[in-house]
Length: 205
Image (cartoon, rainbow, N blue to C red; front, side, top):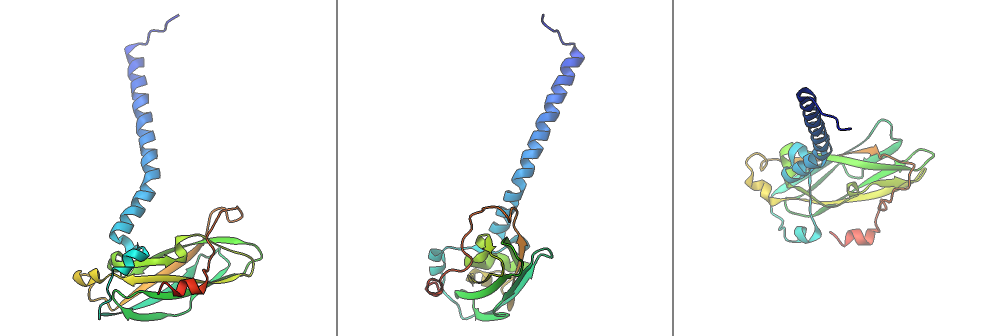
């Protein structure tokens, strides 16, 4: 037996379908907003987000005579039982010059933990010009109980910063990292080893 819907019932059904479609669209935008925001930050340096460069890109950058000092800051989340610190507090160099710095991290707990590093630079306007070629922050890091590792970051400051009136007079940039415990620390996530052989690292200088 067919059911004949009244005009009011048809309107209610259309309204329900419309509301449902809007809810699904909003849900989709919510999931997309995080990667879109990340892409925007990486493209513009917004909020001190640094850039990522390949070795080939870095090879085409010429060092200038303009000096720049990079200060290193290391932090851990309150619930992460790691000791994390830079081996050098500051590093002097020239804009456009490739430099390498080291950080150490130690797991002081009695179980393996996977950590991930979030980062930014200050002043914020220098984020668009701070390029990392290699960094422990590109991958999650798994440390066994009591394990201590030495982790490199290879970077340069883009000479294009000298053409930016808001950034060119910056004498010092602070690169700040904070390690957080990654989701599923007890799982079997595949991660890159925290420290690469030093002979391979040295070849990137």
